[in-house]
Length: 60
Image (cartoon, rainbow, N blue to C red):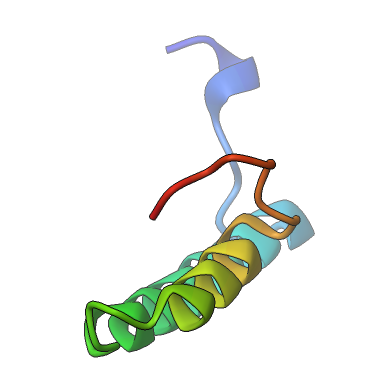
């Protein structure tokens, strides 16, 4: 594997990625317990997972 694809586990980059994975996992677990009809709740959690507003016209 080329060196540019490696991420040192003690680096700030790795720490940020690991924290983001934990946060996305937490938000996904909350998403999984929402009632099916809670469109606003699902959209809000997806926005937090993605870190940006959902594009217009997205159906969840």
